[in-house]
Length: 428
Ligand SMILES: [Zn+2]
Image 1: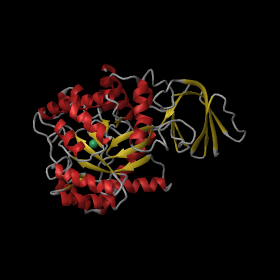
Image 2 (image 1 turned 90 degrees about the vertical axis):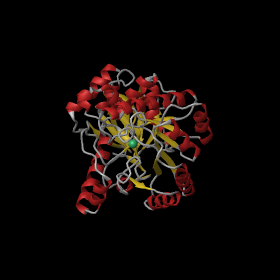
Image 3 (image 1 turned 120 degrees about the horizontal axis):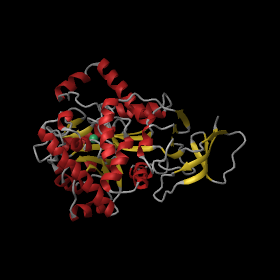
């Protein structure tokens, strides 16, 4: 049926001022929300869906994910040489595409109706985006960066990123990525948790001249630039040279706050990969001691960056970094819980950040992010109230993607690992 009326909703509409509204009707025609309110009359030809006792909010937006890996901890990471060899095999690449497609589907079934990918294999992410948009199969809305640009020895170099040795080469890689019509360009500016020296997890790896050349070229072609950055030095270099969204972040000083404002840049908070490192028993974590030490520095940097940005009215979004160890594609909800707890903000603030706030940063707020007339019908129906307990987000009763209803979505989960993560949730 083309017309659907969700009646008796307890609605959280995703806007910054959201308050729980009871007894609301949400009308959907084809893929659009056409009316929202208590006095909306239901057309006789609409399918009525009674949500008495249930809660509705916009589908979540996960602003930072990697489709090629599942998030299963303990997997062996591949060397750039192995990856290049694998890419030569058509069969391996077909399997890779299948795994990415499955990851995207998992995001959707768990209530994430929009994802932004920030480092993938070749052009797989934008291919999936185009296939989903063409209606070949159901998936989330994808904003795709495809492969990123790094430097030799840099974060994800040769695995999910090209290795630029000079500004000229950086420009060539941006042009090459742009051929597949991505939605943004991703740079790897600093090292990460697992590839940094002890005490220096966010070592600046990309020469500022390369950052600038890549940003200038991306902007010229109409793309904004997201950058992996995990140290104050890296945030400075990124913002001074044209980066638009700082992924992860690090403790900012006054100068960095000024740069954020001048550049109209945003911070994307990703606590999900860092919290387990700080909270789970090292014996279970099986990480080298240095990595754990660095993980705690990075976690603090991520939290400090988001806190300071919020305090200074700089846009803060959130993403899970799904695909990193301990971060599954069905766990967007955990980032909302971490966001509230670590930043000391209300549940409403976390929900806003994961919906309309993220939509604004990603430039898609006219299309999605809130339950308002004219927007895409990207909705979530929950059994419980997420203002009381975020965990209700982990088992949505219904996910609505562009008006298409998925009832009681089933996802294969990793119960043993979920239990470890739930323990963190309970201790928060
Ligand atoms: Zn990432």
